[in-house]
Image 1 (cartoon, rainbow, N blue to C red):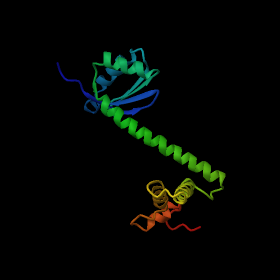
Image 2: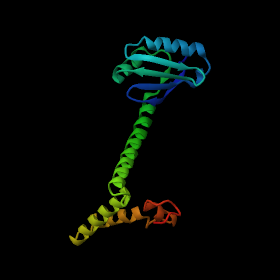
Image 3: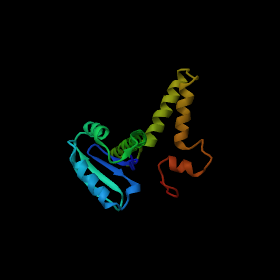
Image 4: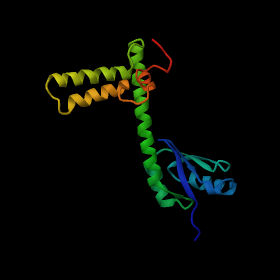
Length: 176
């Protein structure tokens, strides 16, 4: 029995899945057959294939049902699910965190009329927390750690002179 072509998940959201099958690039018959067969699965609403980019775009309603069907019915290609989900979850977490911080920063700048940004607010909180712990006599861990992080936000511990300006939220060469 010949081995199945390798497929990789290149895009995955809660409604769509894009599979790439590089070794079948430009094989119109393979992609037409794959799209027709995948369309018959109960969990799949629609399939778009593109032999030139070696991809299948799959629209589905229920991800759990889709993956159960993929395990039971897939005889078209071999998918490495472990590698796909490990990479997807790490990058998705990072994107969500970055988007969250960016929206918080934008809201804080709007609320303070661009006088304070998120980095400045974090610096003030860390500095205040560090001083509070210092005055309480807690020199072991909390005060030095908070003060170190506050200094790091200002770029005090950096070897490059340009980092202090960037840490304050200013572009290089920008003045207040």
